[in-house]
Image 1 (cartoon, rainbow, N blue to C red):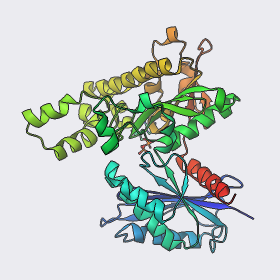
Image 2: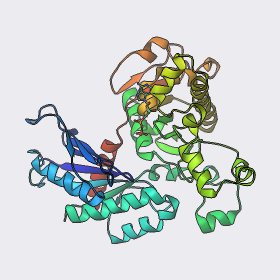
Image 3: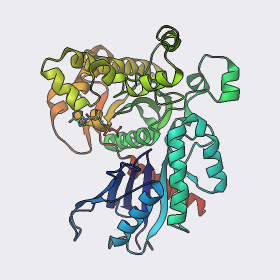
Image 4: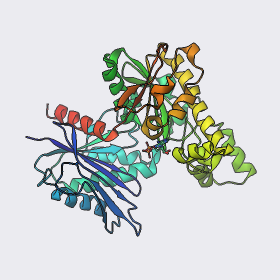
Length: 405
Ligand code: ADP
């Protein structure tokens, strides 16, 4: 009998879903409900090439809220001959963003867990509220199907105390839970396993630095499969330069701009999260577009790419020191997987540290995991295609199996 897992990932105005057959690891259907609550809302559906129906469809439907979105997804799944009546669906895995200190592993969702996630809303208001809606709606749309929350922060709960605490009044941590949590944990965990699998070495013996470079970007230092440091902090704003987020900065800039430019806290929040990063420097936040602008001689775009890569290089150096012995560096997500320019620039001139990328391998095509270091490089450099949805499905299944005893 087939075991299917449905993965749900709710954003503020979108729902991503993916249905897996866990016995073959294949995707039976995936899709994205977009612009929920707006006039042009729609559902984009992807079916496997082998399907009798056309593999990709866009359904223009009014999706006033997430509840309607999940209902529509349920109706679409019911039309998929492989899903049928849902009798093979063994669980639903939810991408959950902020698990605070309470959740360090995938967790079976019940009323108490929902309550705990609600208590964590102040740490990630937009994300956790969307996640909660998803969990509550999915429970009523798929009654009796066990649901599991897989947290973005969970993987980083292994950080040592001296790495996750900020050097600020102790009371801020005790009363307001101000500490480093880190995000993209599902992706970092998946990529670290892929690296170990590809190199044929036990994860427990491998020291890896993973750079997840998408619209949001973060680095993780991983020792023996455990995250020991990561660049995002209390929120995803800290660390690397991102599409629209500043990453690291002197916190005094915030109160300077409040005083000198009369900006409000909300304006500062929006500026640093939505109008900074690559966009702040050159006006565009899409790396493909920025690389094209830079190639065309746009100076600001060139600077944005240099700053993006330089920040990566600084974290690479810092995390080499953290790990002591570095075995592998892995690049993943939209930019990490697709931009040889960014990879080359981030690792340029690091031969003295044992890291060198081969220019031919760097620009070659390849499978989901490939090595790009040059022959003389002591450290392996890999490009890994991430798959957060599949990792959520695997963790969901593992959680259900543990729960059944
Ligand atoms: P998200 O964080 O939204 O999941 P992705 O992982 O899809 O983001 O990454 C999006 C980023 O990847 C964008 O900046 C996009 O320009 C970049 N990207 C995608 N393909 C390429 C490419 N071929 N070359 C350079 N950048 C790319």
